[in-house]
Image (cartoon, rainbow, N blue to C red; front, top):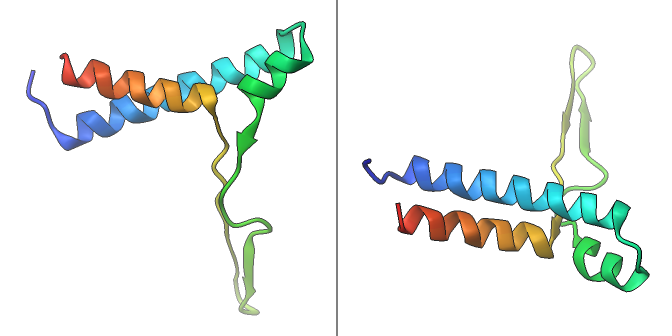
Length: 86
């Protein structure tokens, strides 16, 4: 398989998505509060509240928010590792 930048971006995106989902699942089902704070504690950079422009004819809203936790970062690193060893 040919290694391209788009393929690397796909591996990073899928790894981050799966890691984030696993972090959310662990935060719900973990029995200990300490485990919840380690794996589900997240950093959320972005535009919050969203920027809104009312131009009378059209109303435009722009905003984004990333939710990054420990397992998201581990998933991204796993995706990069799998891409390198592909």
